[in-house]
Length: 123
Image (cartoon, rainbow, N blue to C red; front, top):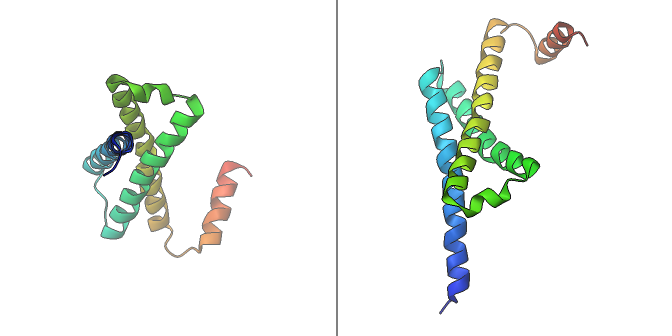
């Protein structure tokens, strides 16, 4: 028989993880509804990047801003889920921008694209 403290802690941790994944899922759904990908390959890459940025970027922002205490209350957890949601949105934009950029320059190699970007940035 397991002890009640470890079972309660496991349930608490599962609730926190589910909340962050909930925010990541909504970030992916919103951006997919806003801008439809042109190919399955683009959709898969953008989806993975959005969820990854939402979960990991959100966790990084929580760590950087020291918002751990918010997870103790329901309202704070909702705010943290919203933060994770917002952290996932830029990933979709970057992936879509990269695909649009690469589609227009299909004849160029990756090194040529990097040189072009560096020249455009003035480096």
